[in-house]
Image 1 (tube, rainbow, N blue to C red):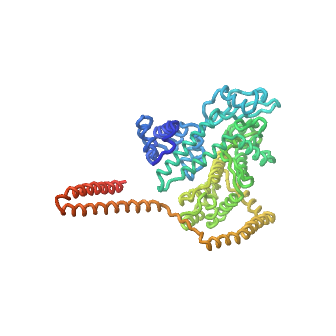
Image 2 (image 1 turned 120 degrees about the horizontal axis):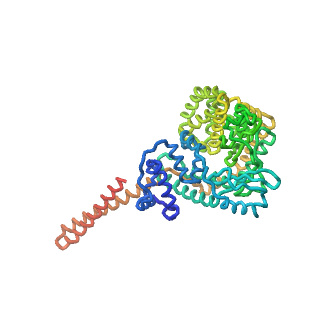
Image 3 (image 1 turned 135 degrees about the vertical axis):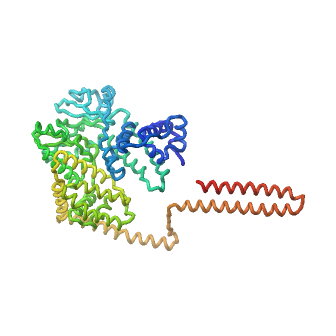
Length: 557
């Protein structure tokens, strides 16, 4: 098996050794062996240099060990774990739940190391931009640090600064992850494994967006516009003049995490009201705004006075298309009304794959879910849990949840858990149902119906315009004899290789037979030809032995 990049890059080889060593130290012996990381050039070389020891130890709690391993490997892998926590359809709910508590709180760098980035990004001395700047960070993560400051105009702000050289570190690790993903995928090809390169590609896009604070600033501004007329929900304002690609300056929020139940009396607030408000806000983001906070855990939702909340850390956000919202409406409607066929169609829209392996089996399992599980979940107000079970059914039928819906599932489950922690009697159904009904009624408005009719009409008109030209081109190609058909059959190249190998063996066997017959004739012809016949027997013997070894060797591989 080729190892194109790892064999050529010394830095990647050392990092590879560190990754394998960390996973082995945390008891992932089987994982290392199944992925083939102990084989081939890198594994043998590093083992010979004693950079990688033989796998030892027995796995205990898989999720906890994975979380600890990712933490030891640094910021790139911490972020990878946080992304995987949003993909229970890939890693399972237990592991996703363990990765949810993955925090990237790290020891802060000194202000002397961070100050050059601030002055380079904002231009000029720090004192020319801020009246005061606290040099001790209020938060320190693997990608950035957050400081409290005050502008010359008097506003208190939170300044988020990217760590030095972090982008180069992230890019180097992404490059290695891409190589490892392709390597493992090739090693396990044909064994029903996941699309590891696709997962790494999704992760790379996500973390690159997170490294660009200008994207987070635009998202925060859009959230602020969506809630501009809502006094109970606060989105920190962005200060564009003091923001750049690596620096983000936001309005300072005085508050406490919403799970600080002891602080509610001081803030003149009610936990039950906040629980309802948080869930209702996320539902509005999903169904009405189609832009939602993808990680609404208590640390990202602050309690303000008089039953108000603020959403922080808007870097991880999800976006839905109008067709996605329609599919969600269909899914929830199917759960509410017990329509199995509608549920099957909605579930298939949520996937990034085309069709299930057995559509009848999928329909049967969803029908049972609608008949037995959905009513009980709805009666208990566990709507997000119903969504989770639908995703589990999809996974059993090899349907992969599309990434945007993975973020949505993460958001709904997280906010429902936060709500129930504040108010154990909270019922999600009365919160989400009005949003679903409003969206259905909105679809029936004459203006929206006319808009859909126009969209469909435009599509049919475009098809009618293109069809005659395409048909004429097709007939012309057929008349000229230029029509070609490309047929692809999986593993057909293996058959071709087998036929080629067999034909070569047959040719060698024929040559051996000819040598034996010819040598026999020469030996029988007389003493003068006996020596030449003996040479022929020797050559035939060598070829025959080579052929036997080849057959036995290939048969054991």
